[in-house]
Length: 399
Image 1 (cartoon, helix red, strand yellow):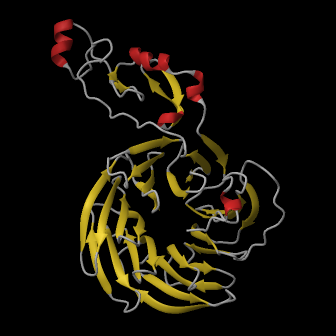
Image 2 (cartoon, rainbow, N blue to C red; image 1 turned 120 degrees about the vertical axis):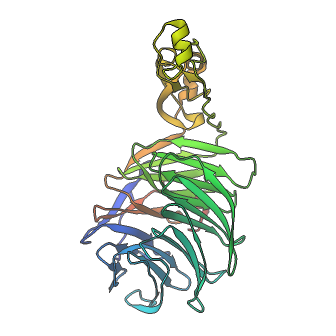
């Protein structure tokens, strides 16, 4: 639906420019049309909206839009992917092909112009890739749980698939087959969003455990950075390479802008122990030590800074520690708490309110615009020029 951009006040926070209402069900995806004052939306009410309306056979779950060719691919609740060609004036959508991709809801999809493939994931626990030239299925790979989100590197033909078990699978796709390269494990909840930066070769993932993880794929050292700055599940991500900022959005409307230029520390792995690694008191499963010392077992906790297994008495203090990604107060052992200086608590992220459920987000950094949408049936267009800094001045192109 077209949306005229009005005056843009100066602010260090996202400024709401326009609010689009009128959808009769949840909006699952919205993208900004490059060089146009317009937005394309797909929703559960089966409509794809540009300037005109297109009714699909089933609820629309996701989309991939390629502006140069004006081709749009729409994933549906019935498992099909439908391709349309949008007219030059954006007033008409012509059906091109229907791809029988999945047996259940399509969760995410990407069109690759280089490969001439449309790649999709679905709730039938699979990823498939199809030729847009012939319309035929090229390959399929199955997972152990729902495949929920997808990213794709066109240069290397690597696909990243997040699933409901919390895992991310890296695959190498070929014409007829694929191979599993590795599986990334770090989230304690279903993965809801992925973003791949092909320059730094960083993968960002957001999940229902309210956290974001940066995976340094290019470094090949297994380096990961944990970012905790949301109170609800993370459902949308976007990385801005020129300003080294990550934007993440959550289901409660939280919008967090992370400074990724600063040198950060990896969060430690949690250690296992049968007794407190500070005072030596047994944990409640350590029957032998409890019997020998004639004491009751204690509950095990972990210090977020050193990773040691500790009891509640030895970890009575809380602190933020932004350099390790903890923007909210977390449990610290007394020794680690005493080492943290006041300047160590300086935030490395800014927090903003979208004031609606955010299920999907798209950005055009070259114009300083962001669009958000969700289950509340509302689409919001934001001015983020002052939030993302010099990306606009540098003329950064959208993904």
